[in-house]
Image (tube, helix red, strand yellow):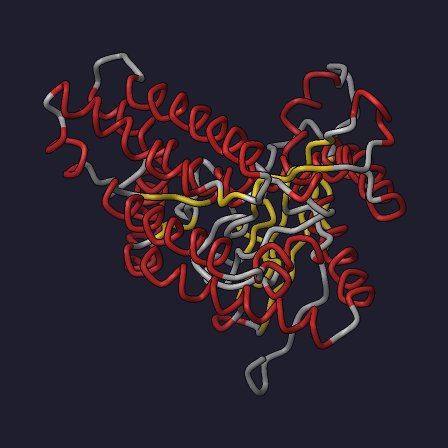
Amino acid sequence: MAPGAAASPLVLRGTAANREPFPPRAIPTLDTARAGQGKAGPSVGGGAGLCPSPGTGAAGAGLPSAPLRVTHFRSNSSEMPETITSRDAARFPIVASCTLLGLYLFFKIFSQEYINLLLSMYFFVLGILALSHTISPMMNRFFPANFPNKQYQLLFTQGSGESKEEIVNYEFDTKDLVCLALSSVVGVWYLLRKHWIANNLFGLAFSLNGVELLHLNNVSTGCILLGGLFIYDVFWVFGTNVMVTVAKSFEAPIKLVFPQDLLEKGLDADNFAMLGLGDIVIPGIFIALLLRFDISLKKNTHTYFYTSFVAYIFGLGLTIFIMHIFKHAQPALLYLVPACIGFPLLVALAKGEVTEMFSYEESSTPKEAAGASKEEPTEASKKEK
């Protein structure tokens, strides 16, 4: 805080439900300058499993060190999902490698029990917020029309007068509080039992938020990101035991686990294979880019989206097949990257649209345009004053 600047107290504002509602809610995100690395979880079942790879997707370092921040993500705001630049994409594998090695040394030097206790508390809070945001649209359908819904705003500012700076501005309503309460039940369940269903609920919430909040604006950047992580994944899985060691030591819901003894033990299964969330989010943001490219062609088809989606399923199936054949942890991106890039590229070659694909770039999205149109009169009014 700057000298002489005073931080205002947290302000909780409530309005009646019939008044003008706030814009769509702000959601918690990970600072993408420092997020993402190291999937982990229970021991990989049978000595084999889908190997973890870079975290919930962002250009940077480790999830344990990623600060939680509140970002306005509104349809009528100029604030955007975090855009991954080509520079971010190029340095991601380097920073992720440093983080992975750092986690490995941490687990070797310090007690695994205390590290995982700290991480459990961190992801307990983060998971509740992510799951609450994820289930909110679905839960809204179950509320009756006469539900007494009120709007609230959590505001935290720094300074005063013209130098006042907004630190936190979080808008929510009564329905959000209900979703938060339900998510807290899952959080307590995960914290006490570390049950694989609770783990997967949090993992899916992180994945959905990651794909929603991270943004590629051109295919070239996507290829750089996927290509760099391809090399990263192969090196740390086949070249050393670092990634597998961290994966087995790191107890946090940043992976999906699949019980291999589900038929024998039911919900009490304890023999798992796992898939790191990076293997979902990283290809996911590339597939989302291809969907936007489909829309830009204005042909009322989603050819590249469906092709890349099928490619992802094919790559994941091939990973599982190879894993069971060789009985060794496999870097999923080894198979996902060639499939997710290769299949759409072949389709583009067949349709003669390779140039269009690689020249496509999103200089402005609907949200940016809406934000710009909203800001213009504001700036004009300032000049008038």
